[in-house]
Amino acid sequence: MRIRHELRYDAPPDEVYAMVCDPSFREEVCAAMGVLRQEVSVDPTPEGVRVRIDMTQRTQGIPAFARKVVGDRTRVVQTETWRSPAAADLEVRIPGRPGHIRGTISLASDGGRGTVECFDGAATIRVPLVAGRLEGLVETLFVAGMDTEQEVGARWLAGDRA
Image 1 (cartoon, rainbow, N blue to C red):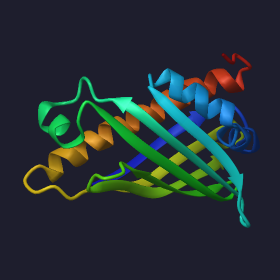
Image 2 (cartoon, rainbow, N blue to C red; image 1 turned 90 degrees about the vertical axis):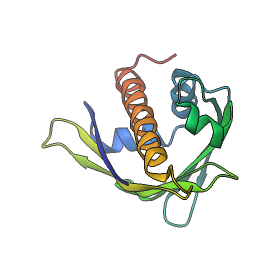
Image 3 (tube, helix red, strand yellow; image 1 turned 60 degrees about the vertical axis):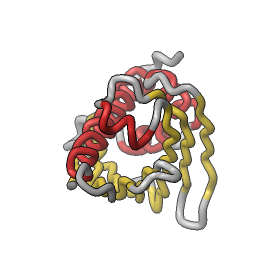
Image 4 (spheres, rainbow, N blue to C red; image 1 turned 30 degrees about the vertical axis):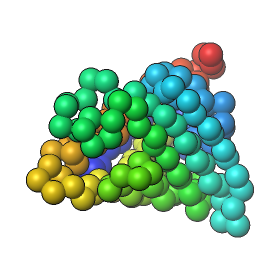
C-alpha cells in the first residue's frame, strides 16, 4: 500500500534537519506518542547520519484482528539513513512480524516560507487474508505518528521544549 504524507515546518530545511538528527527531539516525540520504552541513537555514516529509534508501544485501541497478529505490545524499529541534509531512506520494522514500511524522506524549502518534509513509500504486510486491512491500519498509525512528530517539531522549532 502506497503512503505519501507531507509535514510543514516554519523553519528553514537546515534547522529541520538539525532537529530530526537530535536525540532529545526524538525522545520528546516518543513521549508524545506514549511509547513505553525507547532507545534512540544518532550515528554518523560516511554519507550523513543514521537515526534509529527502537520503541515498544501498547496496541490498545487497534482492532482485535490486528492485535491477534502483534499482541498487547509491539516493538517497532524505525531507521532513517540520511544521505544528505535533504534526503533519507526510511525503514520501519516490527521484529518477528511479516511486514515493514520502506520509503524516502525529503526536506525541501517551501518557497521561502519554511520546510516541507515528505515521506513517499509503501507498507507491505504478508499475512494471508488480512494483509490489506493490516496495511491500511499500519498506514493510519504511521501517518498519525508523523503528525505527532510534526506537532512536537513545531513546538521544538519555536523554542518550546519539554
